[in-house]
Length: 92
Image (cartoon, rainbow, N blue to C red; front, side, top):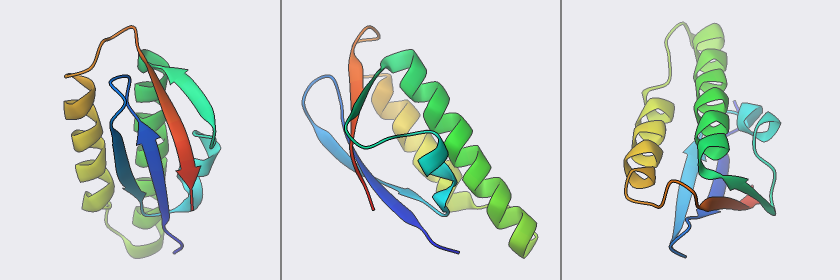
């Protein structure tokens, strides 16, 4: 199953490299797009859950790496201004 690495820039200017176990995340995030924080979190949750579901459909178990990535995103988001924007810089 092809994985996707994506880089995001938080409202404070820091960047994080993130992981998705499948290309499902591409249906929810686009490179070069800035999302308001609530929308970004919704898209990240939906995309990473869809990616985990694809792993489950293929291998019979959910992807803990996708859920770990989502937990890291949510924890980092809690330290950011809620009215800020998150930019998806790159998907590969």
